[in-house]
Structures are given as structure tokens and as C-alpha cells.
Length: 595
Ligand code: ADP
Ligand code: MG
Image (cartoon, rainbow, N blue to C red; front, side, top):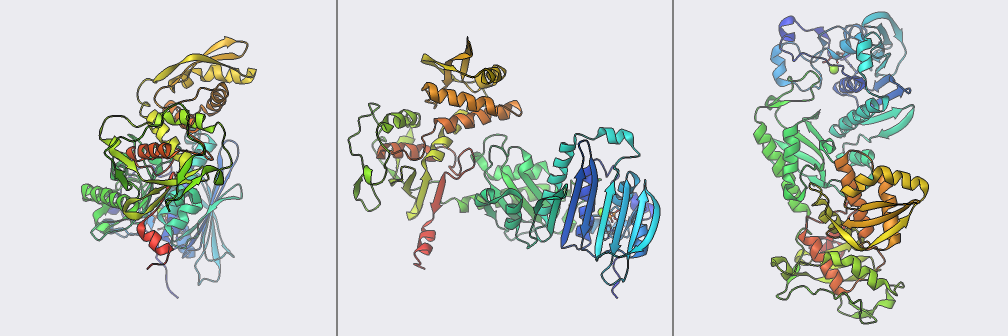
């Protein structure tokens, strides 16, 4: 029978070389240590079962199908500095396991009630060890499947000060879920199942496909927007997936980093990923990214932080450069549509007159050059032009400057909703007019986000009346809404006067439109102030943008598209839905089986 690794107690000399400090800060640290042990035990399936009540995380049960422990090791495992993973300080230079300090189980047991059951595959019986406050209260034989289960309850029961220090149960749960997600992303080859109150939160396939894992954690919507980062030859190999951020995913928490399969946090590497996106990300925003760096273990020192979440590189600069380069080339290769084929035209882009007198029927060009009357495509009509053009005024091109020479070659419109554009080198772009317009308006508004609100006074103030409840809500939100450029004044009797709307790009003037916008804004005013303003801009942009099912003239489409492509890369609308779908020439060749 093959003997597994054997636990021994590290000598003092070795212990003195290990970064000291608190291991168990909060329930999520317990989860992290137990899951790491399961991974080190070679598990292919790990189940994390969390129980909580209204005030606390009550129980954490981690079950794995790893190598298990002998009866002797099962007792020894809870002693201080007991580990099977290193022997001497020399081994610290070349750690391939996640654990090595031999302290986690001892620290966890010291502040809780623990029941361990474990069996090695070839042993006939398993072992159960029970501990309370670090002391073994019973050891017995038991029947149990191969692998290990550790059941931790009564966390911090004997350290009331620490227990008091815990945040609300929802915060602690959020930390736990985040921790398990990060582990899942750094180990797609392991199937992780997370349960809360016996309900499954997620389960990853364990098939080894990172894309699978991302999809099971974040859903198909995100995975459709992902761009793959492929490893390139070199000392450091960087692989994973990145995506332009959604509004709801700001800050470094959407960056998932691991080094040699160990999840880490690193401000430097997160910034390197960000820098790889260059100017296309607004200041202070981080993309979504799952990035794993592989390198010689000798190049990484994991022994710098007691919870092992930070590491030290022998050359941090080189690692950061590689990460930045990998992200940048992934982006360059992926966006065939970043600079679409746009006809250079010596004449300025045509600007639609604002008199709404378009010849009827409106003719549109198709790819074959045939012109079709609009009735054959869109049933809706009558009066739509007036409104559309008012909304589109904001997308007028500047009359001076070099950009006006660009006129994208718009091929036509489908269903009054999508615009077809000839892409770079003969590719094809399909553009969602609402998403595209929304993005243009949003980008304009967002440029104002750092300064005082810019607004334009309405020539004729609009009066709206609200329910008593909405009026009360509006009174609370009025300053926030003003910070986004909408100035409202109480008129009495739950009537309100709208004095101004955001400058630069918002053409909302109808009382009904303004009223629904205001209602939507008071609903959505939540979260930290900076976020609130961006959220409001998002709402405003969505309301101000032309809708689908709206017929556009050739000129209107051209204006829209030029604006879209002179702004930041038009990957998604502010909600994260795609604004542009692109087929590279090679995609078309493949679709038509030309090669
Ligand atoms: P470390 O992981 O740093 O070695 P721990 O206190 O976390 O220290 O664990 C002590 C030892 O207990 C480990 O070295 C390992 O031999 C054993 N062990 C812990 N958890 C498991 C598990 N899930 N499966 C098998 N062995 C385990
Ligand atoms: Mg450990």
C-alpha cells in the first residue's frame, strides 16, 4: 500500500523562518484554509457547505475526495507547526503546495469546535477526531468515504472579543463566496460546489476549462464578452480571460489573479492588467479579468504573508510587463472592429437638417445597392422622424477638426434596429443602434463625472406631478439627481418643475419622458456617491438614446456610426450588452466555407 505524506512537527529553526501572524481573521479565512488543504490533498471534488443564522456564520463544512489521512496524522494535524508539506527551512524556497506553515488547522481548532472525519482510499476504516477549543475530546474509528471532511462550528466561541469584531453576517458570507469563487477560478480542474443553507449557490464542472468555470460563476452574458489571453513563450506565462467592465463591476474586485494556481492579491499586477487596456478604460476603472501567471516556483516567494494572499516576485517589474503585454496583444488581436473600414471623404459628413422633412418614402441602400421603400421593412412609421432626429441631434459631428473627414460605409438598416457597416478589410459589423447611441450619450455624460454637473436650462420649464410617495422619495434624492444635471424644484401639491437637464447630449423634453426618467432615477439612487452619479448617467443615456424599431436615414446612421467609432472602443453599451458584433473577413470565409 502506498504511504501518503506523513505529518511531522516543524523544528523551531524552521518555524522562525515562516511569516508569522494571524491566520483566522474571519469565517472566510477558515474556508480558505480548509479548501487549500483539500486542493493540496489532490482533491478533484470539493464541497463547501455554509450554514448561517441572522447574526453569524454558524457552521462551515468542507468535504474533499483527496488522499485522506492515517489515524496518526488525523490527530497530529491539529498540533501547531504540524505539516506534511515541508521539512526544513530550505524547502521554503520551492513550495509547490498551497499550505506549508502547519498552522491553519491548529489555529482554527483553537477557536472553535471541530469534527474531522477522514479515510485514505486503501484503509478499511476511517478516523473521526473531535476537538473543542483546540483540545482533542475524542478519537474513534468510523465509516466514511475516502477523503476528508472538516466540520467547524462555534467559531470564536472562546474569544468573545474576536467574535464581536465580526461584521454583519451578509458581509461575512460575501467574503466567503468571493473566496470560493476566486479558488474556483484559479483551479478550473477541480469541481467546487458551494452551498448555503443547503441550497447550491454554484458548482463548477472541474473539466479544466476556465471558460466553463467563468460561465458557471458569472453566467453566459459575461462569457460572451470575454477575450482570451493566450500564453506566449517566455519565463513568465500569462493566460486567462479579460472583458471590458460593466458599470456594476468597478474597482479591483473584478480582477482575479493567481500565480502558479495560488490566488493572490497584487495592486501592481492589477494595475498592469488595467494598463494593458490603455486609454480605452476610463480613469479608475478596472476590467473584468481572470489571469493566471505561471513561472518557476523559485521566482515567487509565497512566505511573506501569514494568510499567503500576497507574494513577492524576484522581478515584479518583469512579471508586470509580461502581464501588460499579454493583455494588450489579446485586445489588439480580438478587435477587428476597433477601427472599421471608413471611407475617407473630403466633404464634411452630411448633417441632417432639423426640419424633419424627409422625402417619403425614405429609400435605403442595401448591400446589393438596390433601394427599397421603407414600408417593406418597417411597419412602424408616422411621426417617428421628428423624435428620432431630435434625439440624434446630440450625435452631430463637430464641424471642424480632422474627424469630420471620416464617413463609415453604412450598408443599411435591418428591422429599424440594426445598422450594417462594412468592417475593416472586408469584414462585416452589425451594430445595435440603441446600444450604440446609448454608449455615445453615456460617454459624453461620463466625461462630466469628475466635475460639477453641466446642465442646460429648459426654455420652457416642464411641470410634472408625482404621487405623494414618489414626491417624498424625490425630496430625498433631489440633490443626487441635481448632481447628474437634472434640476428640479418643488412646486407644491406634489407638482415639480424641471428647470434643467444635463448639457451635452441629452434631448429629453417631453413631460412624459422627463417624468419616467425622474421616477427611474429616484428608484436607482443607491450606493456610494460616485457610483450613484454614474448609475444615473446610465439611466439618462438609456432614456435619451434612440430605441430599436426606429427607422433612420442614411445620414443619421452615418452620424451615429462615426461618433461611435471616434469615441472609445465601442464594445458594449453601458449595461454591458454588446453594441457591435463583428465578423472578420476570415469569419465570413469560414461561414461560406471558402476555406
Ligand atoms: P499546512 O497546510 O500548512 O501543512 P494545516 O494546518 O493546514 O497546515 O494542515 C496540517 C496538515 O494536515 C497538512 O500538512 C496535511 O498533511 C494534513 N491535512 C490537512 N487537511 C487535509 C485534507 N483535507 N486532506 C488530507 N490531509 C490534510
Ligand atoms: Mg493548510
